Image (cartoon, rainbow, N blue to C red; front, side, top):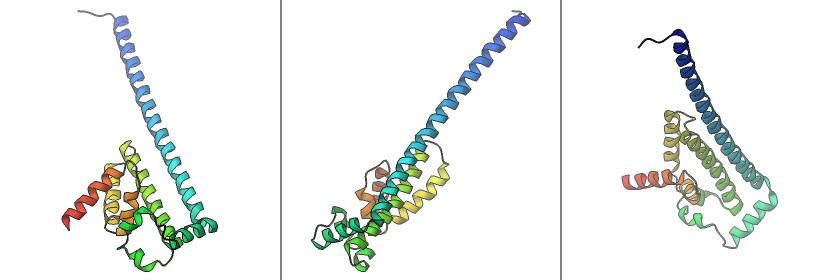
Length: 168
């Protein structure tokens, strides 16, 4: 089978067209993944700002103090009763301020995990963050706060807690 130059050029053009369409498709997928990760990250930052606003609000912290003193403690507190914080922090507002600090750590880890799931960060980076998460879970206070949350990170936290408890 002998093809003319014209036919060869048409075949080469068709191959180039298919290749460029494949490249455009991959670029669109990557752009979508980056936009999705940015949207998720923006949501995390918004939640962090909400937490910081609560921490800076005297009236909110006074309300937390009043609730704490009246015995209305959050459900997660029963799991943190053996923590360092339970022995050193004396007021509900101090405990809730610490809770919010830990919650900020959680949100950062949640953001990292989401970006890892999207393929936007290297596995080694996530493994380092996961090792940090594991070390956090040895602390009863952080563990109680992290287990009180619900996100895509929850399953990993539950597995890590089971591994830690199984090793003890």
